[in-house]
Length: 54
Image 1 (cartoon, rainbow, N blue to C red):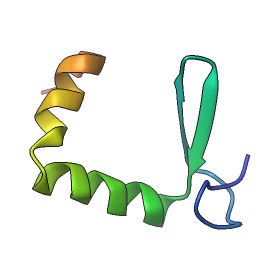
Image 2 (cartoon, rainbow, N blue to C red; image 1 turned 180 degrees about the horizontal axis):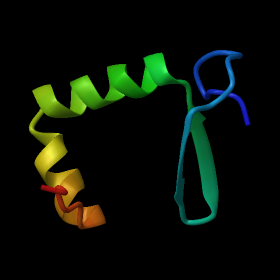
Image 3 (tube, helix red, strand yellow; image 1 turned 90 degrees about the vertical axis):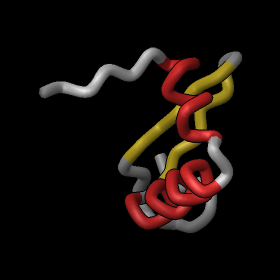
Image 4 (cartoon, rainbow, N blue to C red; image 1 turned 60 degrees about the horizontal axis):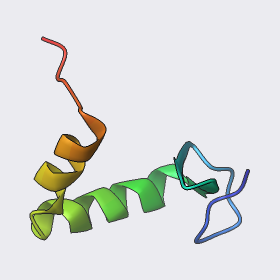
């Protein structure tokens, strides 16, 4: 699977309602930064039930 934004191999993939999208490392980090800046990261953590390993 290739990245949704470029032709690089996807390092990460997300699926919702049967739609699967891949992201390369660079674009994954960019989207994650955008979420963090828009306070969307907390909402995303709640939706996917992310627990931090200590």
